[in-house]
Image (cartoon, rainbow, N blue to C red):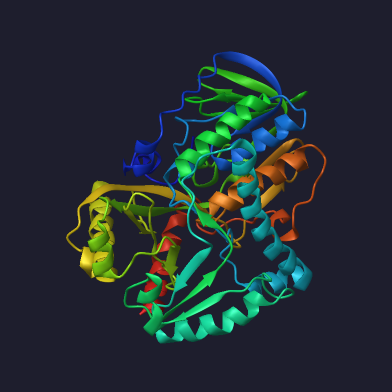
Length: 440
């Protein structure tokens, strides 16, 4: 594999709370060669959703996960099943794909949430669900003014999402359990919070029951064209398949396949979780809400009070995966947490970890056939919002493989390449500097 971060970025980065909440899944490693209609590379939400929907569509499926189940972002994220998937502005998307393309994209974001909801309901997955939609908190007066303007658009069926958002003024925040130094809040009643590892485990069981074969500890080291399709090579065997789906997101490699080189940019995200907070401690801060929330900064913080009273707090990660860089980001996330929630500044942090999200050159996901590579498909690039969109992308790419292509234009257009090649993560430093300056 050819990857652009230090090796530690692809290894265990801290103690993840979600891993303590589930019994470890065991998938066997691939042993020898086999055949399948479709090989899926990557065992996260996208890969599992693709495997499930392919198997239910009658295809034989072999899924290859490089590490253990839940290893990547699907087992380490904040558990926000919400609107998102792209970082491109509505203006940019309208310019590229037209008003109809933008409207279809907004519908797709709602569909993505519904995909997760339908999977949870259909397979009876226990995910510790809570939160009625998502709440955005204004960190500055200008952000509050923008929220009030956005609320009108969100309610519009043609320009927004056709739902009724709730605006909460600064003086009423504590009454809603949203205590903090915010200038106001906007709640969009779409989405919910969940335990991402429990969801992942349930999705895996559903795929297995549908007939998909799931293999862990089986990294794809090459994807080679064959007369009958493609051969996916691993250290202990391989899969000969007519079609291959690449679903590796931020854990991708430059050469699996070669086409992917330079077309994705991993970025680190960091999370801390506190010990359970008592009712008195929650009241002292004024935060008693079960809403999943985030602030209006470009380099946003995301957080939520979980059902057992623990508080999860996340933000962007470091620019490098070295002990020194990790120590620096650990200090920063704790300082930001203490600044935003001062009543909890001395509360014990029991878990802290990092993981990789995935950015794309035009800040939008890609789902579809890989150009000039018949039988090869890819689905990736959710910009830190992969619970819903990654699950939906797996469903979409499965339909495409089976000949029922209905991918919206925003996701179907193949990505270009970032500048700087293997050194492209250097682009993150000036981007973070500019975002931090804007956030002041």
